[in-house]
Image (cartoon, rainbow, N blue to C red; front, top):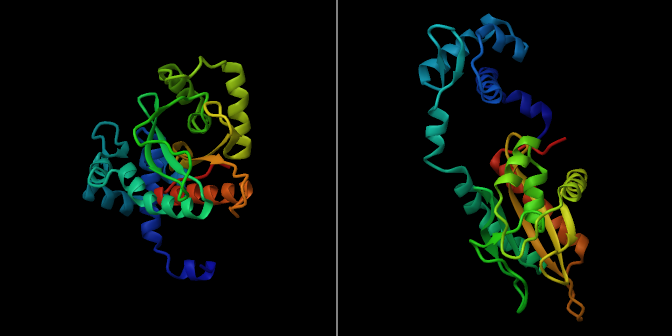
Amino acid sequence: MDESVNDKYRAPALDKGLDIIELLAERGHGLSQKDIAAALGRSPNEIYRMLTTLLQRGYISRDSKSDLFALSLKMFSLSQYHPPMHRLLAYAVPLMQAASQKSWQSCHIAKEENGMIVVVASHPSPTNWGLAMRTGSVMGLANTGSGRVLAAFRPLEERKALLDNHPLALGEPEPDEAILAKRLQTIIERGYEQAPSEATQGVTDLAFPVFDSFSRAIAVVTCPHLHRIDEVDVPDLDEVVATYKALAAHLTEYYGGVVPS
């Protein structure tokens, strides 16, 4: 949409309210009216009405002793009506089907659960042969594209906790931390993983992060790419990369995520 059209239909008051909510979510601790105004580049008087309205609607709270503002649990409560990951996966299923049809490859989505890398959605190849991961399958961290991408796009403390809490999957070797750190840095620089599978011969792992609003990988779109050598005219590797990269970007946008700069 043209920028002039965007400006025409903007709601400045709503912008201020959302700026306050996002700031309090980012900081994670109470802020005074003066601190909020300074962080947003506005005067205290300018945000007074916004704070009052957010208080009245229950989206923020104010400590009676310190007079600091913080997010209430209302946003969390509202989110429980439609759990974000469930909504994301429901939205992703038809897109995965379309990507699979376009690429002639299978695909799946994995996420981290209590240190484990778990397949939470899967779609098979539309051809009469292919490699597909079953939903519910537990995968390795250091030896799979899905696991490495989930680890790469996390803050260092979270990454360490993930590695410490990860129980080795069936067939997964103990990782070499120095080698893994270099591989994760390569993934960060490229933006996704593309490497020969360390679990199955003849497969190229293609794995693309889905980001949350803090630029953390909360899920991974993965294609275990199989290279055909017969005479069937199928998309080449670069086209498959583009297809699944676009799918991950679409899911990030739907989730309200932010791609790290």
